[in-house]
Image 1: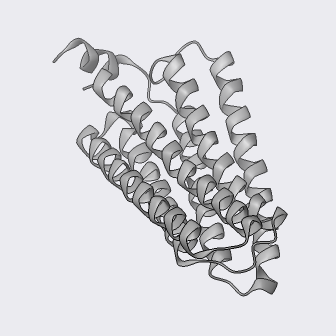
Image 2: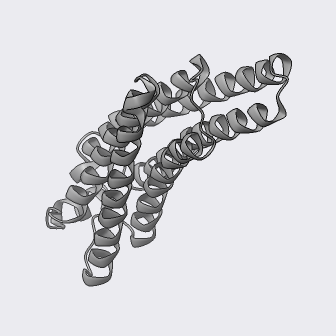
Length: 214
Protein backbone atom coordinates (compact mmCIF):
# COMPACT_ATOMS: atom_id res chain seq x y z
CA UNK A 1 0.00 0.00 0.00
CA UNK A 2 1.56 3.31 -1.12
CA UNK A 3 1.40 6.56 0.86
CA UNK A 4 -1.59 7.87 -1.11
CA UNK A 5 -3.58 4.72 -0.37
CA UNK A 6 -2.67 4.88 3.31
CA UNK A 7 -3.76 8.52 3.43
CA UNK A 8 -7.07 7.70 1.71
CA UNK A 9 -7.67 4.86 4.17
CA UNK A 10 -7.06 7.08 7.20
CA UNK A 11 -8.93 10.15 5.92
CA UNK A 12 -12.59 10.34 7.00
CA UNK A 13 -15.08 9.74 4.18
CA UNK A 14 -16.09 13.04 2.62
CA UNK A 15 -19.70 14.04 3.29
CA UNK A 16 -19.62 17.61 2.03
CA UNK A 17 -17.59 18.17 -1.11
CA UNK A 18 -18.52 15.22 -3.31
CA UNK A 19 -22.27 15.77 -2.80
CA UNK A 20 -21.70 19.35 -3.97
CA UNK A 21 -19.63 18.19 -6.96
CA UNK A 22 -22.42 15.79 -7.90
CA UNK A 23 -25.04 18.52 -7.53
CA UNK A 24 -22.95 20.65 -9.88
CA UNK A 25 -22.66 18.01 -12.61
CA UNK A 26 -26.32 17.02 -12.24
CA UNK A 27 -27.23 20.67 -12.75
CA UNK A 28 -24.90 20.84 -15.77
CA UNK A 29 -26.64 17.86 -17.35
CA UNK A 30 -30.05 19.47 -16.85
CA UNK A 31 -28.73 22.72 -18.31
CA UNK A 32 -27.32 20.98 -21.39
CA UNK A 33 -30.51 18.89 -21.76
CA UNK A 34 -32.64 22.02 -21.64
CA UNK A 35 -30.58 23.74 -24.33
CA UNK A 36 -30.71 20.64 -26.52
CA UNK A 37 -34.46 20.50 -25.99
CA UNK A 38 -34.77 24.20 -26.83
CA UNK A 39 -32.98 23.94 -30.18
CA UNK A 40 -35.23 21.01 -31.12
CA UNK A 41 -38.45 22.67 -29.90
CA UNK A 42 -40.89 24.90 -31.82
CA UNK A 43 -40.04 28.60 -31.64
CA UNK A 44 -42.94 29.40 -29.30
CA UNK A 45 -41.69 26.93 -26.67
CA UNK A 46 -38.06 28.05 -26.85
CA UNK A 47 -38.36 31.14 -24.66
CA UNK A 48 -39.77 29.13 -21.76
CA UNK A 49 -36.82 26.73 -21.96
CA UNK A 50 -34.34 29.60 -22.09
CA UNK A 51 -35.93 31.01 -18.92
CA UNK A 52 -35.46 27.62 -17.28
CA UNK A 53 -31.77 27.75 -18.23
CA UNK A 54 -31.41 31.10 -16.46
CA UNK A 55 -32.80 29.50 -13.29
CA UNK A 56 -30.44 26.53 -13.64
CA UNK A 57 -27.47 28.87 -14.08
CA UNK A 58 -28.39 30.58 -10.80
CA UNK A 59 -28.61 27.19 -9.09
CA UNK A 60 -25.16 26.30 -10.42
CA UNK A 61 -23.71 29.56 -9.11
CA UNK A 62 -25.21 28.86 -5.69
CA UNK A 63 -23.66 25.37 -5.67
CA UNK A 64 -20.27 26.86 -6.56
CA UNK A 65 -20.63 29.46 -3.80
CA UNK A 66 -21.54 26.78 -1.25
CA UNK A 67 -18.47 24.78 -2.26
CA UNK A 68 -16.19 27.78 -1.78
CA UNK A 69 -17.76 28.35 1.65
CA UNK A 70 -17.05 24.74 2.64
CA UNK A 71 -13.51 25.09 1.33
CA UNK A 72 -12.94 28.03 3.67
CA UNK A 73 -14.56 26.29 6.64
CA UNK A 74 -12.92 22.87 6.46
CA UNK A 75 -9.31 22.04 7.16
CA UNK A 76 -9.59 18.46 5.84
CA UNK A 77 -10.57 18.14 2.17
CA UNK A 78 -10.86 15.02 -0.04
CA UNK A 79 -7.99 16.28 -2.23
CA UNK A 80 -5.83 19.39 -2.65
CA UNK A 81 -7.62 22.67 -2.03
CA UNK A 82 -6.34 24.23 -5.24
CA UNK A 83 -7.68 21.24 -7.19
CA UNK A 84 -11.11 21.69 -5.62
CA UNK A 85 -11.06 25.34 -6.59
CA UNK A 86 -9.97 24.47 -10.15
CA UNK A 87 -12.66 21.80 -10.48
CA UNK A 88 -15.46 24.06 -9.27
CA UNK A 89 -14.25 26.90 -11.48
CA UNK A 90 -14.00 24.65 -14.55
CA UNK A 91 -17.52 23.26 -14.05
CA UNK A 92 -18.85 26.79 -13.63
CA UNK A 93 -17.16 27.78 -16.91
CA UNK A 94 -19.05 25.01 -18.74
CA UNK A 95 -22.30 26.41 -17.36
CA UNK A 96 -21.36 29.95 -18.39
CA UNK A 97 -20.76 29.04 -22.03
CA UNK A 98 -23.82 26.81 -22.38
CA UNK A 99 -25.83 29.75 -21.10
CA UNK A 100 -23.92 32.13 -23.37
CA UNK A 101 -25.11 30.14 -26.39
CA UNK A 102 -28.73 30.47 -25.27
CA UNK A 103 -28.28 34.17 -24.49
CA UNK A 104 -26.89 34.83 -27.97
CA UNK A 105 -29.79 32.99 -29.60
CA UNK A 106 -32.18 35.25 -27.69
CA UNK A 107 -30.20 38.46 -28.19
CA UNK A 108 -29.70 37.96 -31.92
CA UNK A 109 -33.14 36.42 -32.44
CA UNK A 110 -31.76 33.27 -34.02
CA UNK A 111 -35.04 31.62 -35.00
CA UNK A 112 -33.79 29.11 -37.57
CA UNK A 113 -31.76 26.39 -35.85
CA UNK A 114 -29.19 24.63 -38.02
CA UNK A 115 -28.11 21.00 -37.88
CA UNK A 116 -24.69 22.10 -36.65
CA UNK A 117 -26.19 23.93 -33.66
CA UNK A 118 -28.25 20.88 -32.78
CA UNK A 119 -25.19 18.64 -33.13
CA UNK A 120 -23.07 20.85 -30.88
CA UNK A 121 -25.75 20.90 -28.16
CA UNK A 122 -25.87 17.11 -28.37
CA UNK A 123 -22.08 16.90 -27.99
CA UNK A 124 -22.15 19.22 -24.99
CA UNK A 125 -24.86 17.15 -23.35
CA UNK A 126 -22.82 13.97 -23.76
CA UNK A 127 -19.69 15.70 -22.42
CA UNK A 128 -21.60 16.88 -19.32
CA UNK A 129 -22.89 13.35 -18.77
CA UNK A 130 -19.31 12.06 -18.89
CA UNK A 131 -18.24 14.67 -16.32
CA UNK A 132 -20.99 13.40 -14.04
CA UNK A 133 -19.82 9.79 -14.46
CA UNK A 134 -16.22 10.80 -13.72
CA UNK A 135 -17.19 12.70 -10.56
CA UNK A 136 -19.18 9.75 -9.25
CA UNK A 137 -16.29 7.36 -9.85
CA UNK A 138 -13.83 9.78 -8.27
CA UNK A 139 -15.74 9.81 -4.97
CA UNK A 140 -13.61 8.10 -2.33
CA UNK A 141 -11.34 7.21 -5.29
CA UNK A 142 -13.54 4.22 -6.12
CA UNK A 143 -12.59 3.51 -9.73
CA UNK A 144 -9.92 5.81 -11.06
CA UNK A 145 -9.66 3.84 -14.32
CA UNK A 146 -13.24 4.78 -15.17
CA UNK A 147 -12.51 8.42 -14.38
CA UNK A 148 -9.75 8.37 -17.00
CA UNK A 149 -12.06 6.59 -19.47
CA UNK A 150 -14.66 9.33 -19.13
CA UNK A 151 -12.00 12.01 -19.52
CA UNK A 152 -10.78 10.33 -22.71
CA UNK A 153 -14.34 10.32 -24.06
CA UNK A 154 -14.63 14.02 -23.32
CA UNK A 155 -11.38 14.67 -25.20
CA UNK A 156 -12.79 12.83 -28.22
CA UNK A 157 -16.02 14.80 -27.97
CA UNK A 158 -14.04 18.04 -27.92
CA UNK A 159 -12.26 17.01 -31.14
CA UNK A 160 -15.63 16.14 -32.67
CA UNK A 161 -16.95 19.55 -31.62
CA UNK A 162 -14.00 21.27 -33.32
CA UNK A 163 -14.75 19.44 -36.55
CA UNK A 164 -18.47 20.31 -36.46
CA UNK A 165 -17.66 23.94 -35.69
CA UNK A 166 -15.05 24.28 -38.45
CA UNK A 167 -17.36 22.74 -41.04
CA UNK A 168 -20.31 24.88 -39.93
CA UNK A 169 -18.32 28.12 -40.09
CA UNK A 170 -16.92 27.19 -43.50
CA UNK A 171 -20.42 26.51 -44.85
CA UNK A 172 -21.70 29.70 -43.25
CA UNK A 173 -19.17 31.88 -45.09
CA UNK A 174 -19.70 29.96 -48.31
CA UNK A 175 -23.50 29.99 -48.38
CA UNK A 176 -24.64 33.02 -46.38
CA UNK A 177 -24.66 36.45 -48.03
CA UNK A 178 -26.07 38.47 -45.13
CA UNK A 179 -23.22 39.71 -42.94
CA UNK A 180 -25.53 40.04 -39.94
CA UNK A 181 -26.51 36.39 -40.18
CA UNK A 182 -22.88 35.36 -40.44
CA UNK A 183 -22.09 37.23 -37.22
CA UNK A 184 -25.15 35.87 -35.40
CA UNK A 185 -24.61 32.23 -36.24
CA UNK A 186 -20.87 32.35 -35.76
CA UNK A 187 -21.36 33.79 -32.25
CA UNK A 188 -23.75 30.99 -31.30
CA UNK A 189 -21.54 28.29 -32.78
CA UNK A 190 -18.48 29.75 -31.03
CA UNK A 191 -20.19 29.69 -27.61
CA UNK A 192 -21.23 26.06 -28.10
CA UNK A 193 -17.77 24.99 -29.24
CA UNK A 194 -16.17 26.84 -26.31
CA UNK A 195 -18.52 25.05 -23.90
CA UNK A 196 -17.05 21.75 -25.10
CA UNK A 197 -13.55 23.19 -24.64
CA UNK A 198 -14.49 23.99 -21.03
CA UNK A 199 -15.68 20.39 -20.56
CA UNK A 200 -12.23 19.29 -21.72
CA UNK A 201 -10.64 21.68 -19.21
CA UNK A 202 -12.73 20.15 -16.42
CA UNK A 203 -11.66 16.69 -17.60
CA UNK A 204 -8.01 17.79 -17.41
CA UNK A 205 -8.52 18.82 -13.77
CA UNK A 206 -10.07 15.44 -13.03
CA UNK A 207 -7.19 13.65 -14.76
CA UNK A 208 -4.69 15.62 -12.67
CA UNK A 209 -6.49 14.70 -9.44
CA UNK A 210 -6.65 11.06 -10.52
CA UNK A 211 -2.92 10.89 -11.28
CA UNK A 212 -2.09 12.34 -7.88
CA UNK A 213 -4.13 9.65 -6.12
CA UNK A 214 -3.36 6.61 -8.27
